[in-house]
Image 1 (tube, rainbow, N blue to C red):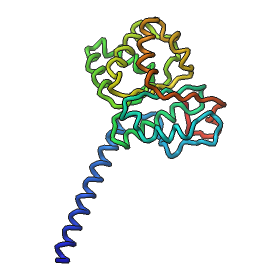
Image 2: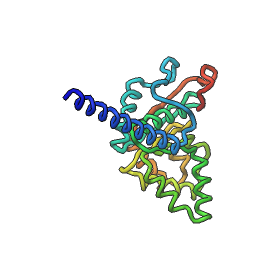
Image 3: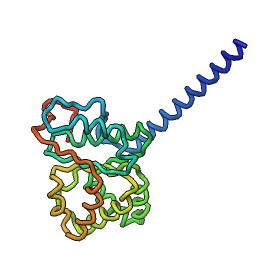
Image 4: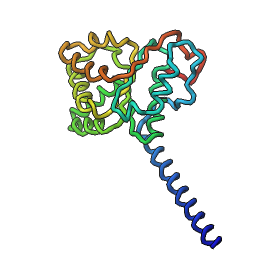
Length: 217
């Protein structure tokens, strides 16, 4: 009986090990597909630097309930305070929790959509974005949006509204986004979908780059 029990135990350990290996492979696939700009993780966030970072809010967001509940996250602040690092850290945690994520700089997204519109991939690209659990739009609002860009953003957010989460970083405070988007009617719709169910981090202070060479905005 002891031998049979030992055999069952050994078999169970092998099954657990296989399950763990499969999940690790899936997680690595999610991280590759996310194309994160930085190798960042929640556990390495520096709270010592004075930049208005709420440790309790970070801890709540680290649980990924905001993604489960299809909420958004907006991170604003000047260059160098770690907005992109935080975005990548939350995305990396999302991948660890089983969610899909995609990181892209906002200007690059509009470029890619313009190319996709020209070669017939536009609807397919929008469908892929719509299926992603967490979309990270980095450096939003660096320049006023064109009419085409406004419509692209509207399409993306309409597809995601109430269904998927979006994380946006920007040097501009949220109150200036309406002017940067441009068209008042489209700006109202875009901001309603982004802001009404969003957690907002307003960072401040001097650049952290001089203190941490691996940290970029």
